[in-house]
Amino acid sequence: MSFQQGLSGLDAASNQLNVIGNNVSNASTVGFKSSTIEFGDLYASSFYGTPSAQPGIGVDTLAVRPDMAQGNITTTDNNLDLAINNNGYFVVSAGLASSSTTGAAAGSAMYSRNGQFHVDRNGYLVNASGDNLQGWMASKGVINQGSLANLQLNTTNIAPSASTTVGMGVNLDSSQSVPTQSPLDPTNPATYNWSNSSTVYDSLGNAHSLTLYYVKNAATTSGTTWDVTSYVDGTATGNTTKLGFTTTGALDTAGTLGGSTALVVSYNAPTANGSTTPMNFSINYANSTQFSQASGTNTLTNDGYAAGELSAINISRSGVIQASYTNGQTSTVGQVALASFTNQQGLQPSGNNLWSETYGSGPAKLNAPGSGGAGTIQSSALESSNVDLTTELVNMITAQRYYQANAQTIKTQDSIMQTLVNLQ
Image 1 (cartoon, rainbow, N blue to C red):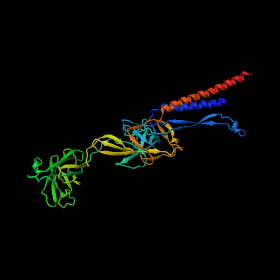
Image 2: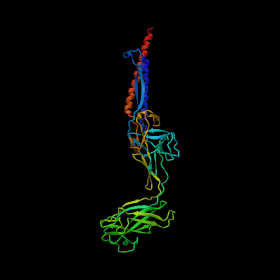
Image 3: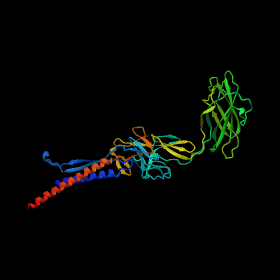
Image 4: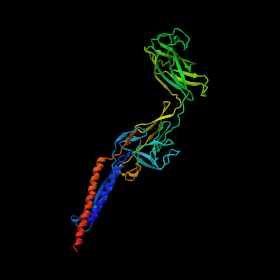
């Protein structure tokens, strides 16, 4: 029986060295989880046997269990490298060609802690094996967390948008005097008190220079009004409005002074570029004031913009993917999904840094990063292997001694058997 005991010990030591070797070989594998081996003793059972006098018959390998502890987070220069802080797994669709034009999830769902992703030629986010990263695509900037889909970046240019509203919060200097000359002449500063400018866009995204001239009127006991006249590309639009301010410097939103809070501009000059004409937009002066300080533009917004090209992709802690364009606009593309499991150690390793769901792991629970127990995402970062090389090397020495000791029991048993043979 000693031969059997020694052989089982050799087999167990060999299995332990295999596990240690696999851990060591994957010490630099992103997202890799080290494993430990568990042993159990073996006993032969006999109905009439005496348990206290019955020796064991060796050792058996019970299980190889992964250690799901998180590895260290290291930063990178690629903003598509993603690391999960705390619980959760990326969901990828394995076995699906990334050339799919439907964007629908297909293939078998697999799970990984390796966040090394890149964009393929069709704009899909994939890993080194070509598996598609799963999440929820946005529709008109709104994310609906329904069925998972292959996350895809739109690499085409963003279309231009004509200006319809310009928000302009200004302060007009109350200490200014009424101009001594009239009518308004942009080339003669004596005919106006102040001017400011902004950019507006036509239907094709062409930029036009909007200049506004402010002329102060004589003050009354109720307040003061200012005439505002607009020019586009140096040409008068013929649009003028009044801004009224109370004696406290606040904008007269009730129209008591006969003024308005907005200037509607219709620019009728012909456009040689083929854009829509006339250009129609309004200038909203809400939150404007008249205080005794230099005239200036405090706030400025514009809902128009030129055409733009994709310039950058940013992924937030909650997994929201946002595209930035050269025209200053941003667009929500989608959101990365994370899966979590009741029993992580029940997952089945499938190679290529992937895990598959089993009955022992329980079903995948899909959540947005930072919700439902899922961890958060860190962009431009990766999770290192959780292998501790120092520990593995010490374990390797121990396993080697274990192997040698079991080999020695076989050698000793062989020597005893040889002695018995020699008795003849």
